[in-house]
Image (cartoon, rainbow, N blue to C red; front, side, top):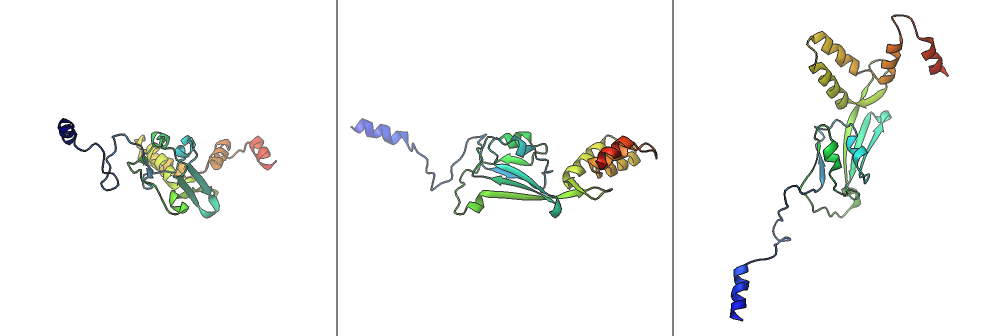
Length: 182
């Protein structure tokens, strides 16, 4: 009996003191997804990749905004959103204590402004996404005037860009306009 008691005392604590002391998680632990709105370009890649549909993105053109939303109650912590994010704006934290008293606390939202077309005025994409695309195109240009032209073109919606491409130096592609009026 004395031998058994000595063995038990030598073994020490075998459990963690979790509720009373912080619990250290393993490296690579997948906890609550966190978004850095300053880094996010509102491209929607994370919402497309989410298998549980915990991430949604809604475009409200009349209010000039795009709303990104995470519902933690649906999240399965798979990490797909983190993998597909082109700007690394979303990552899985080590936070795992997610109990709340109100359902509204399970939602995380971020709002982004929309870019308006410089020709027709229609909102067509998030401002940050258009700015990033323009900057990436401008990086590959050696002439500053060409870089500015690319930035100006990035502020034109796809419909206006298509229309401009079909107009040939004053002459108009009649077939395009017939389809547009029908």
